Image (cartoon, rainbow over all chains, first blue to last red; front, top):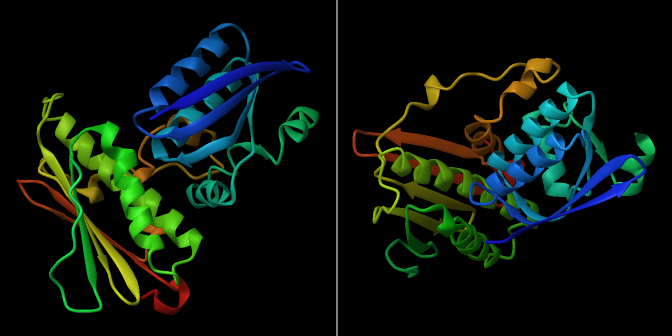
Length: 112
Length: 160
């Protein structure tokens, strides 16, 4: 199973484009990449999930961990590109209240 | 590796059974088989298939982790995923032999508005299973755990 992670710098944000399926197999790779970015001082992250076809609770945990670390470092994590079912999962878990969720990358960057 | 077949049961119920090694690289196969089986029934909305796909994946993840905790990374242990496709519902059982756990023992998470909520990176899976399906049942024994997940075609009309 594949997961792709691509990072672009845009208007003071690091935009993380994620593609593939995020579960217990691939979540550690995403976690490491996000921790690496935060370690480089990039604490303002837009994580775009537009290319993600599946996200489970392990993936949610990675996003939660990244948001906590980013906020501790004075930054934040903004999410974009969530499919309808993913939005439902965020609502069910209450995590829609814990994250800023933007429709698109443009909105995420403009909102920050 | 995957064994799918139909058998048993009274018409119009159909059973699809899949046995996978208790390893995470088989998770996407389990998801695919369950979602494909569900999509065979045209009255099943895509949204409900997505609910079931995620719930089954969470159950399989717990089963795989239970086996991993036994300390056999190269395990030949198996997990059985049984989908019973009935007229009004799909019932999925995920059966492992990884020793039992008590879902009642799980810590409850802080309220969503509590900043401490972000301290919890785990523990979301059971809640997701319970919310995404119409019925969730955990049976544990010394041998392992059986999770039964039921999703009705039209959720609101059948929800108990």
